[in-house]
Amino acid sequence: MIKLATKPEVHVLESRFLKIPKRVSLSKCKSLLLLAYDNNPEVALSAEYLRVYSPSAENKRDLNFPNGKRYIQITDIAQCGNYALRISFSDDHTTGIFTWSLLLELSENRSRHWDKYLSQLHTSGKSREPHTFTLKIPNN
Image 1 (tube, rainbow, N blue to C red):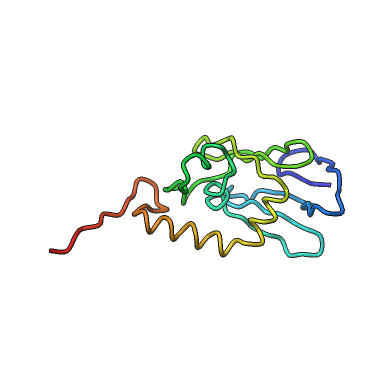
Image 2 (image 1 turned 30 degrees about the horizontal axis):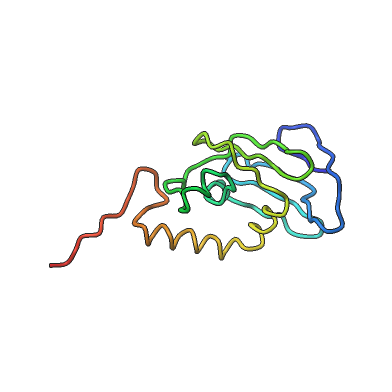
């Protein structure tokens, strides 16, 4: 059984091969998605992390991580069938469908994914801060 914040309890079909969280909730500040798995500590995924790794067609088409998402918030969580969550964000991004397997993968590989995101921002001269970019001034 999964409990979504401010939503009625939802029953999910269990699978021996798919690790599904027993509880899904949103922090009071709406900046963290909290996932509780059996016999494991609760996992907290930031709204920024989820937004930049959103599996939407828009993100896949751009081939780059979106920038300026440091203060983004989660505005809604909706269950999609028995296989995923649709997470909506404060920048009006509503098309990311996060499967249970993707959420588990993002949970287990947070450090590696976060480093990749920060590295790409640095390389492209972009920033986590909204409306900010880096200027590269050539040396004479």
